[in-house]
Length: 166
Image (cartoon, rainbow, N blue to C red; front, side, top):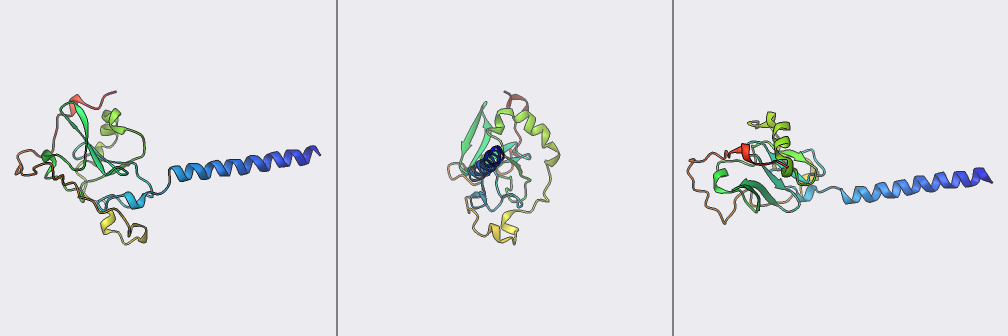
């Protein structure tokens, strides 16, 4: 009788574990359909893209850019004019799956510094993988509220020494 109860407890525990695992999987599941066509291939799930060339982020689920401006992190549907020369299709994006990575931006910037200037990443638009056929088609970094006509006077570099701390 003890063996039967012990076996039942073990079986119930395994089923409970599998059920909990399935719930976690659903919560953090696939979001390929939310990823923009300029996002990197190879990720079933992405919370944020970090763009080392401009030291900014993209919130995949909210379809918003997050960048530092006037001593604060700003969310916007597009990049500001100082980044008008930045090409989201060819700039390297690092997938960051952690909450509010800009809060510790100094660490993120240091961790992914080696990706600055790289332009060898395949993007969803150029993939033939059927998983990406229904990706999100967004505004590709252009914010109608900002004038991008800076004519190259500002190349997207900001003073990185004064933000991203705790």
